[in-house]
Image: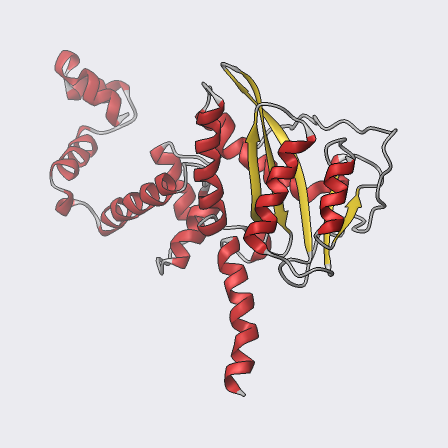
Length: 300
């Protein structure tokens, strides 16, 4: 109503408009005075104005994908104690909302002619420490130059992305590149690490399986071949599609997708709050794990 009066006051006048709308002229003038001089506003209004700036900062700093719950969590981590319902109310006023996930389309195709490792995970996507269980999957992105594909390798312990690759083709070589990045970055000790994927032909190819075995990694493939057998990888890819691909398209080229993926992976690993690991970023969760291991050694 305030905006409507602002837009039409020069033509109709404030009082005639207020006789039609359920608002008193004095109420409108009080709002106008507060906008001209915020010091005249009530303590609650002044507090809301400060919070709105902080909410906008957090929302913009996180790709505009955080909803009220994540904004509330991040402000809490910064020491700003405020009720979640207040964040929800102010975000509605500001027209801010989080990213909403949609239905995913499966693109990996099982090759029944290829030998397939057994399912050693059985939908239990938990790991007691880093480099014990990795999951892999890939998805597609439509660009003006045709489809491109993005593959990810995720460490289950803190859901950290440890390898990724963007390619114009969905051949086995491109998912192998993502695995090579993970191996180079993490350098896992041979033995004790399991790699899980779906039954896509790229992941059960001879080249991929031989590379896993050569690195001392035990391969595992979903027994049924549906999304639940690789649910954690599906979840991370769902976030990628929701927070990057759908919000920032249309995409011109592979290079544009690749750069956006690089930005998102860095943000996801180091700043994005993940509720399943205690509302902290994956890198922080891993750092806490290693700090807990070092504490008894230092004490001794």
